[in-house]
Structure formats: C-alpha cells, structure tokens
Amino acid sequence: MYTHSLDPVFIDFGFIVIRWYSLAYIFGIILGWWLGKKIINHIIKDVNLKFNIKEFDDLITYLIISIIIGGRLGYVTFYNLSYYLANPFDIVKVWEGGMSFHGALLGIIIGTYLFSKKKGVPTYFLLDIIACVSPIGIFLGRLANFINGELVGKVTTAFWGVIFPAVDSLPRHPSQLYEAMLEGVVLFFILNNLIFRKKYKMGTCSYLFLIYYGIFRIISEFFRRPDPQLGYLFDLFTMGTILSFLMIIAGLIISNALRKKNET
Image (cartoon, rainbow, N blue to C red; front, side, top):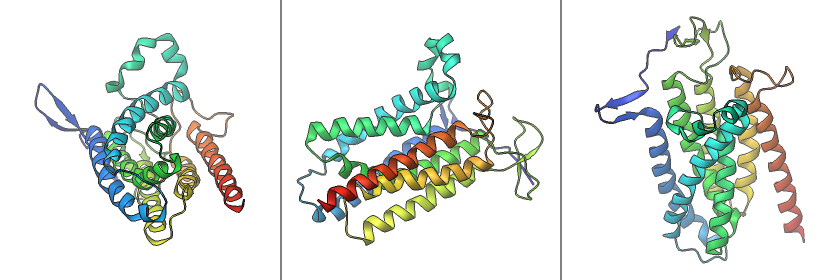
C-alpha cells in the first residue's frame, strides 16, 4: 500500500513556480508537434493534397488557444455551472485548476475546423493527425493528475491501492494511472499502428479516437470517484461517463457517414 506524498510543484524559484501539470501540457504539445510532422510526411503521399508542413506550426497555436478556452469552458459548463454562474469572474482563474477533457476536445474540433477553412485543408486530415498525437498529452496529463493527488479513484482493498492523505486515509484505486495507460498508451499504439502500417484513409483515426477514448474513459470512470460537486447523475452515471458515451455515438455516426460517402 502506497501513501501519496508527491509534490505538485516541480521547482519553486520564489518569484515563479513550475508545476508538473504545466510541464505535462508543455511537453505534450512539443512531442505532439514533433510526431505530427512525422505523420504528415508519412501520409501526405496517400492523399492528393498540397499542404505546407510549416502550416502545422500555425495549427499548434490554434490548438493551444482552443485547449485552454475549450477545457476551461467545458469544466465550467459540465462540472460546476452553478458555482460559476454565481461567481462569473472566477471563470478566468485557470491557475486555480478546473479543466475538462471533453471541453478541450470540443475546442480542438472547432479550432481545427476554423483553421482548415482558412487554409483550404480538409478538416479530417488535420483531425486525424491530432487524434494520433493526443494520447501523448493525455498520458502526461493523467500522470500529472496522479502527482497532484486529484481525480482520485474509489476505495479499494487491492494491494496496489493508494492512500491520498489530502482526501482521506482510505486506500483508493489510482484511477489516474489506469487512464494514463488506457487513454494514453493503449490508444496511442492503436492509432499510430493504424496510420503508420495501413494505407491512410481520411477520417478513420478521427472517429476511432472518439470511439476508443469513449470506451476507455467509461472503463476508467468505473474505478474513479465521481466529482464531489456532482456525484452520480440519475444516481447511476458520472458526468465523464455520459460525455464519453456521447463521444462513442459521435464516432459511430462519423464512421457511418464516411462509409456511405466512400460507397458513392
């Protein structure tokens, strides 16, 4: 049985504090940018498309803004709306925590769509690349969640249970690590094996990301303690489960639409 004692702060210079969570975002973006360019060079030959790889750098800027705005507004809307309606000025206090993956996902989709229209590039082409690199950021983000001792799991008697003193003295599932493995490692290998070893089909990685992430997140939610301010919706589902189920449905709809398009 392990008692959590990790410090969320990587280094404190006094005038500035660098946290593990911030580093997760930074390195997730850097590694995603690096892998994204490799993917573009690999698949560009399979599509009749003129795309200047330098434009991918511009897309990263769009994505950073989209992740921050979407992630924050998603948390405000999905997880703590009543509080922020009463305290609207707290919405901008991102440094106090409170980001939503599903909100960030919506932000990424909207930001990528706007970028693709501006550059005249198919949206699915860009979303496929983002889908393949996103598990890197998800993996690092979930590790940072574990270091922070947040988003803890349910109480367990398993020998690998972790005690989070900031929460209580009970051993809990390290659900952050479950998510890091499923939504990060496993999803990464599924999508990148597909894009590097199979003939590229535009849109495939996009809808598979929605489906597989949704499945993996629902599995993880089974071991994760629900958000205290929400609890179980309808006395059965967490907000994460509901939003992930909608992801799966969206993925299946896109898959069916692309299949019909290819048949015509």
